[in-house]
Image (cartoon, rainbow, N blue to C red; front, side):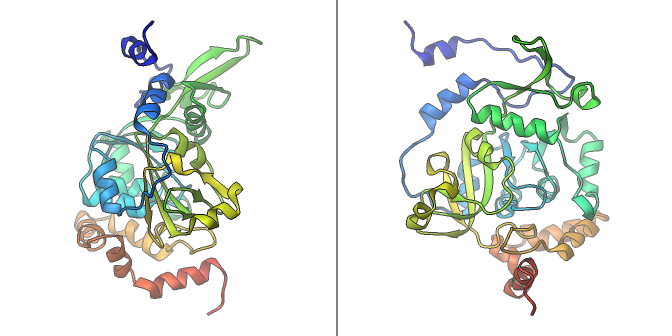
Length: 340
């Protein structure tokens, strides 16, 4: 009898979306399991590296990525800037709650397709002009979902399944422009939508603390990051601080991402800037307004990107440009409501 690998290689699969949207990633749970079995090391070894090396070695042109955090909270800005600096192209993105992260990748012309739930808007701050233009012009191919649907697509992948049945989107235009398929419950006959599992090539998550092996702890809102970590074929972690393994072991229930899911760990203090990092520092609203203003003129935007991304060596250079520790300390005071 042929082994699992041979059977899988012989397996012929076609994916037929239910709506008019496309499925950008392979939802086949057996193929994903084969990858995790053969390509995902389980040894507890040190995985520290640099942002530049992680982006160079783990993110390829054409990959599909999932970005952690929620809105402008706890976004892995350092990795996104490095993707722009290294000129990564034809990237697919899960636009789960994508705000400034989407804006950065559009500014760098990195992405060409996106599963969208929330993109373009920077919440109460307004809309990103370049992001809106990229969507409206068709420069970025899109398939529509709700936030819940994309969350459950990660959940399906984390569970090792090819889909999950859901009730959201039924009877809406979002269903029409998605790739979900209507199905009937085999037990009750109730109609559901089947949403395909989402297995990103790369997950990128910023956390509060991690050890050198990749055990990660997150304070505050987490949303789908636990499932994203389990769904991603390769996982890059940036962390506010590296801590001894003993610190992790003291409170093991706080370890939401275990080491065996992680491929790279990088200590990046203020790594979510200009986004918010719960209990650490507030979002830099002045800098985000500067981004939005620069987008009104192509020359202003080019100068802005040169100053803050292309013209600096790394993320530390960017932080120096925005005012360094003086500005960052102000944001730390603001987050923790400490009077100066």
